[in-house]
Length: 363
Image (cartoon, rainbow, N blue to C red):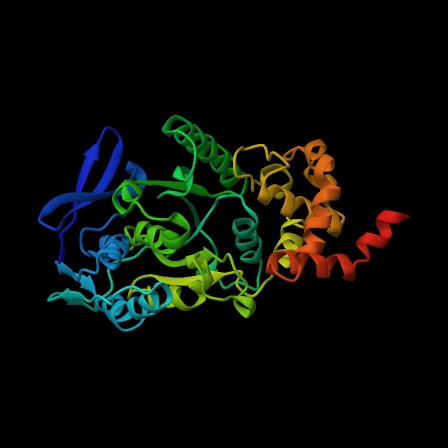
């Protein structure tokens, strides 16, 4: 049994930390989320939702039920026990567990009506921003804040010194982009990665949404940028493959989650982003650097797509185009050879054919 206790707020030299003690196998520990003072006022001790979602993978990994000792959103309690936990257990062959709580709350918390989305400046992220502009989006669904999480994505490779360096560089980059878009960036730090010690790819949805549930007094809507087109998604090791199912079921009486961009293919998203002027100075897809290296997996895929779309030159300030050009021909051949086994390559190849890209290159 894992037992989670009522959270508390701690002030730490200009930072505000929301933390909760939990016990697992007789050992006590603490999960925490931290932000600056301005947004610390929106952290809530009135629900244990964030900590339950953050520690759910720990219970699944250990096959242990979770007891919540404090107020929990009724809607989340139902969604987890009757839908999310059985789904994850079936996908990954885990033993089903149960969440137990004697203090279920159906009354919403006071809320500022904020609308948030993550800002990583990648294709999925900028597509979400681009899509949610203009008169087609009702006022109550217009983005008001951007969020940047430190829940494990910056800790997937390299030394701790490199991880901290790249984290700070990305925060500065995203803050500058948010400022140009006229919005603030909320930076949320956490020790969740140290506690879970699991694949980030498998667990990122619950990690990031747990950090969002901390701010239920601020947000009533959150757009979680999709990594898969729902039409072609198949369950796999990436939790993004079933976001379209899981996100609504992780919503609470206060906060509704939406899988943004899930109707678009990666090529369609890249096309949309290529029409978004701010992307020419802020697009960042690289696995290793702020100025995109041009050679890594994500850089190659993005640049080839942009070249097919006729937009690659717009990104000369943020990509190493010379590095990409050295490997472009071999990468084109890789895409063609693997188009039947890799859905992303298939998508790119079909766009090549549609736009007669290969024929144009011979002219």
